[in-house]
Length: 364
Ligand SMILES: Cc1ncc(COP(=O)(O)O)c(C=O)c1O
Image (tube, rainbow, N blue to C red; front, side):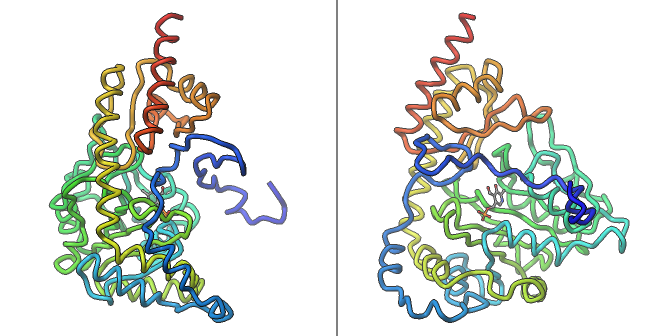
């Protein structure tokens, strides 16, 4: 509390990011869904060629070269893409652009009850009413639950976080079709972690109200540069630019633009790393199940696993052993750990530690 802060800042509960290790601290970090592999070697080449003298100049406001590379990657036109400083920023701008303030409408933005915990924070911060829609008991999102519910917009992650479950693109289309006056934001941060994944980007020509949000943080191993983008109809993209230019005209710096472009142009490397993560996940899930864990089927680079022992104790004991996973101390979620898929070696070390903990719990 401070008398210098306004009511909003005094009242708000900010988003809490996963624990960051202290500089120099050695841990196995499986708590923020980062990619365990380095970005493509093309990124190194791009940085080596980078002309440092250009840093005196402001960057290209539209990130044109990144847009070109992203448009080729996603098979859309350049007018369908908007870049920002991480998908968190793109989401924040999308909330401000597409959803209406409480004072102007009684209508809420709809979101699943268990989803990315930034969505409720954005709705508080931008003063937008919200209504949470319960997932099914097995964490499935049922598109029918989004039909006939008055709203000023809809947002969900697909695959969802922290639950890891995905819905089919036809189900996203069903939601968009039933809500033609609202923008439907499909946050695809984790979409790449299925072998033959389908993206809601394929819907944007037919459904002018679908806004897909992508990030380079996960499948492209570039959480450190902060680059996210939106894909949608030209009308939606124009709206996002109006909001950006009322807030920060240069959201993506020159270095990030060069790095992002290089990564987007190397689809072969992207396919290679995501395949490795998908294979590691399959092996890890099998081993966890043998140890008595239960979890929904994962389409993401993490699993949402319910251990056969007290979850909070397991989280703490793993932390004491230098292994960070994510634990949400909230009803229902506190029965589960969200575990990022790392390298095979990291997962083997984690499994060793888990086996020890399960054995100790059985003997106590
Ligand atoms: C569902 C979801 N959306 C968006 C983000 C933000 O990603 P970015 O690093 O692009 O800001 C995350 C980060 O973990 C996430 O889990």
